[in-house]
Length: 494
Image (cartoon, rainbow, N blue to C red; front, side, top):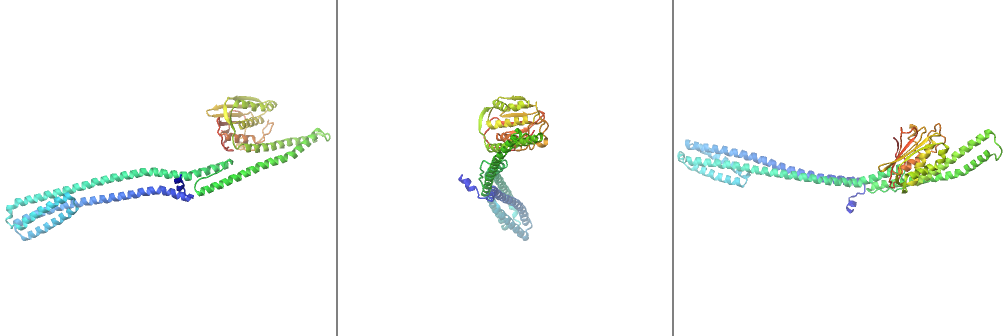
């Protein structure tokens, strides 16, 4: 941990420079090493080529000069011309110079051979220069033997030069192989170093960026209950601090909104209650009998008062649901008794509307928030009853599908128009009334359904084709872990 703190720079730019250094230094070291190795091998190969060409050229010169020297010596013995002796001496000097040059480039074995060649050359020189012309014929066999020996020594010198070149070539091949192996292992070492550098960059940049992305996603979906903390470079930590300030501010605004809704609702309920009471007194004839037109106006006032009171109560309920949806209170319960309880609560409405029920519910065991699941069922069943004509049918299906529960609630009403499907899960959106609907929706039921289903990690779908009316399908895990809700994210049409 101390090493990680030492590696962590104070700013994002410093972190980028550190990451680039971690990636570039090993690569730079490998490049420098490869350059040095290739330069050394290139110089060695060039030297071997030059030495081999020089040795071959010098060996050829030795052969050529020995032939010329032998030919001049024999002509001098036959023609007895002093000029030929001078030519011989010049050729002998050239042979000595060539031998000396080759001696400097040779190894110890070749130098010993060249030393022997010098001794034989000295013997021939003495024999040619000290023996009087015309008398050398008696020693012709000895001179020929010496020149043959001289040629054999040159052959040996050439062979030793070739052996020297072969040895240097073998050494070059060995060095090349070692350089190749060194570069291979350096490349193998670069792989973990590069992975380490990528890991450090990912750890110090990727993690805070993921934290920021998750924080922005939470803010966008209204999850304001969890604090935002970003650990990383100073720049990203400062950005995390700004997001935390934004979260707190949004929390304050949400609380102010809920307080405003509660206060305004309570403030409106008192005068509304007086209006309703006065309307009821008028309808009961407490201040005198009303004629038909007056009773019609009073009935309109009463009905609108009831509707206004229901909307105020919905505002209070919605505010309470918003407050209670921050977390889940999970427990183990059976689904079938819960569905039975919900249907018993709707029994009077079902009888008044002469509705039929089609219920097929598996006796599944859930580990979830029982209260929120009950509200999901109540809102879906209530919505199906409201938008179904008298004498219609409400279909309820629930079955286990692996680790998930699939819940279907459908009606025989007019269904949901295509243009309304993107809005029906929005709070207070009631859609358009259709013929045969006796009770108008209040606009928050489906919004609560989506919020609570999403809080359980599930999805809500609007399904077509199986029933004539609206068909809602919920898929959610049967065993739910506590998790924050994602408002309005997972509802779509199938």
